[in-house]
Image 1 (cartoon, rainbow, N blue to C red):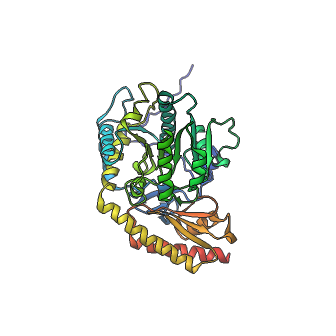
Image 2 (image 1 turned 180 degrees about the horizontal axis):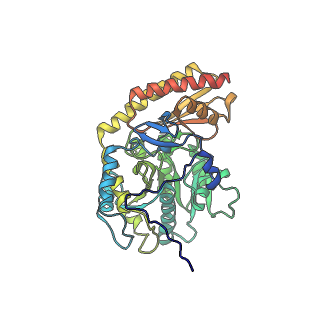
Image 3 (image 1 turned 90 degrees about the vertical axis):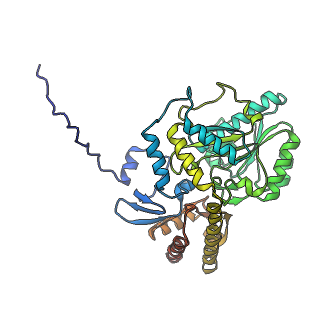
Length: 419
């Protein structure tokens, strides 16, 4: 039998990757998304370039993720340095970066203990499991009900999507986890009617992100805290999107003066590198004993090194003060557009650099069209539901970039209304 001979690649040879484009997505990716035709290939700060070399101003921050901008040099250096030392050891061992990150988060917050995972959904899953486990050890047998808000978003696992209270995300996935009650957001009377002694946890976003960029009122969060104390329930704040400096405070709860029992975070903690965390107190953390919960990759040295670098940059008074200044300027600029386009823009709302531009009833359901018009002008923005355009630039955004984004959005709105 003749054996076919092949010429091995030399050590200097580099395999040529096949050419790909937006159409490749439709051929090889499970269709859970419908992405833009723009395929980004390079970015720095808030500037992004696509396959055709076109420049875009990114006011999405990868859905509030790249809060220090793309390829922040200190974060890149932290990742490169760790990549040369230790990537992964598994949860049978701990590592120095995760211990440093946990210590820094504990020092910066109300918490005593941290649990690390890979995403916001996993952080919320851990929080919900912890709440039920804590109740099973410290409360009556029937203390398992979870109260959350309508139009909330807590992740895409079956548990978190059920707690989220947005029907379109649960359609076709029944039967869903039981003992979950949904109430209107910011409605104190609804909370009083729903929260009883059988409730183990109340989960809420201090600022609803996907639900339309809706900040909670101080009175509402204080009422939830009082009701949880009264009925022995744990108060969980989901700060996956609004945490890590996004509101101008390190975490939103700090600005409200209401302390939760459990806090979840992700997104901006890794500035694009996957990482999530759950923070809680010593007493509550004790319910998750060895073997009760876990994750293979959570708290790996690469992610923890990145998270530590990000936290060190954001958790500085001057940095957070600048976020608040940028928020005021961006809010003012967007409200100026509302004056120019009163028939299109009904309201500009939000907290810090998490801002929603609410469309008027005449343009109900057309937020996606606005984002597409903005993209044509070289501006990347998001939707938050079908009636709200979400504006979430990196926290390092400059006044000049805000001016440029406003100008591009003005052109987009002008073409949108005249289309």
